[in-house]
Length: 119
Length: 111
Image (cartoon, rainbow over all chains, first blue to last red):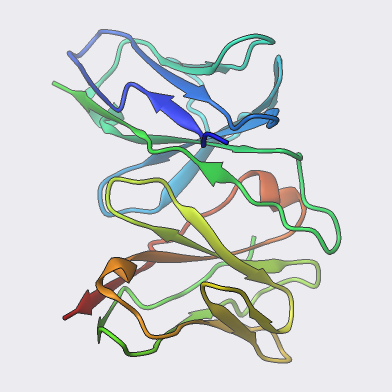
């Protein structure tokens, strides 16, 4: 069973360009989460999606950032008009269930990340 | 979400036991304690989760005292490949969908 896949692994963009990051969840997982990690820091939650729905986008900047998880195909994190401060590692995670239930474990399975560098 | 505090870094040697303590003084009744491991240039990986007392799996043990205000991750007989950042997370059902990672503990295993 393949794990969470992300591509590209490395992405270089110039200021003002658009960045598109893709995430294919594990087979059978319909819940996707995006996180951002700045150097030497922990991961910060951005957005949680279920197929065709955004469930929680409280961690995502309101401007320039958008996310989708269509019925078919990977989840996409899109950053428009990138700035140098967007340089970071972006991780996608997936899970088979939306939240843990008493006695169960809600494990999020993380992909290898996409490292975005804005020149 | 209960805030967690853990040491910034720890050094150890191959074959030793590593214990990382995480403080979460404001933990709520419904909160679980979860530990993730992150290797350089990789995404975090779930290690272990517990609510109270002791939990053990093939990778680690998690010790949680009765007051649950702290927890200790124990890695038995570490090897060089255990060099990683270890994150302690605390949260309830609602928080399970938006994991909150602190700075973590950088564990360096030396030969």
